[in-house]
Length: 248
Image (cartoon, one colour):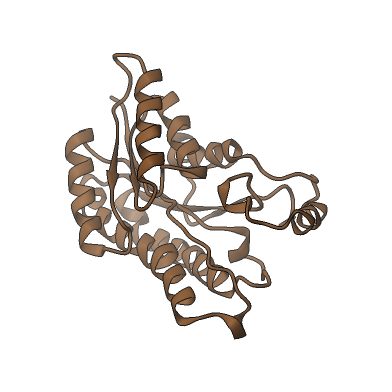
């Protein structure tokens, strides 16, 4: 019987590639999106156009992870439509970069509300189901910024660092219930999020990567897929850095 997974922020970037990766492996997949309605619709058309008739189930659903009540509704809807829920990937995230002395309250709050509080709310919403079935895997998409200081990202680094700490603590809380909780911490990934970077700044960042290249989204998707799978059945509370060697 196919396993089912919910991916937040799955219309673009790492979330989208991860969804396609898991569909190819036979998972039933649901993705949420907030502002990327056009991208979500295009993705749904593409996915359904390439999937075979007897392929896994796939659907998109609009949800802002900052709406905690909506997170509880989403879990119920997804579990009903997919016939259960075996995994959650907390991928939804935003950046509002600024040096701290120039950072506004809104820039701080928006990042914390989405990147940390949103993951907390979705995780809390799915725990009763996973504890009842005594199984499940949660993968939180953190960042290299949560492990190392990055200039201009005090809000993003704080949120992603908090996500890593939450992962480690929760892993201990729910291990006896058969639930695993892990993180991936990508470095510089080739997604829409880095297109806004200045060309020279991007070159300098690449020079600091031992592999001397950016990470592909499919490489992150492979790490997420592994942590969701039974191949990682003995792994919980861990952070998998996918950063080209920066954390070595």
